[in-house]
Image 1: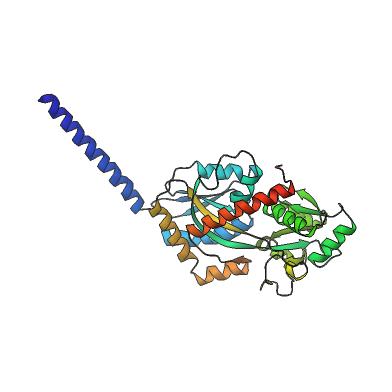
Image 2: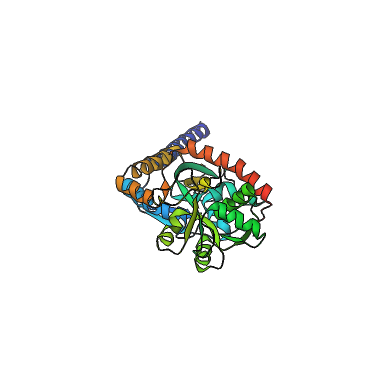
Length: 328
């Protein structure tokens, strides 16, 4: 009798413990967020996604009533910071602000990485599309993308282009250009896009493709000239600049920024982050600021981002294989 009573008491205590634990977890999710949210960005400060996400994060923080911090961890081509997000607790207090290189290019470039672009994360939303532009040092003799192709074919192997490193968006964009046009241009990888832009302005390397948000101030200052906008239509920020398509039919290239959380992050938390992001992007001043920097507002939500990742993985696999691109 005494033994049965002890077992009954033990089971009741266990039942109440697990009920309390479940209530505590549910309550924590309902009260989310109740402390600072950290965003890890495996990219350099001043990169396209960095310029894109910082003002968005500030507005999201206002909507959520908590501080959102940003830590740039660009080492190891972005693999280190991305793995740190993947290995963080799935509570909504560590997020990842990535570009599509992290999610679609690097997984196709490296045979072994410490994250899976699909299995390691819960997609929150795309942030925006990032317009790219083909730029050159002002001394470069050509003025259009077609001029670049012509000059490169006249001087095979003599025309270099800069990028932020093997597998970077700048590298992939120009590799697609090379494959599409047959221009015998030579890749010069740098440790980050900022260094690449600096050397193009200095005339060390003649051309590169870059996020418009990164090079727009240099274009306006006359330190770089535009050979072509990599979108279907001209940019309202540079209405006199031609598109690449105007001289080379069919070429387009852009990238995107996205917000993700570690796998297992509760749906209620993802929904709150999505709501905060959507409300942030409804702000007229923020929208105006992003458009003025060369970003294009995109469909929001996890389903659209899932599609973008899946399509990007397939496309980048072919580009990287056909180009024989290897890691640094």
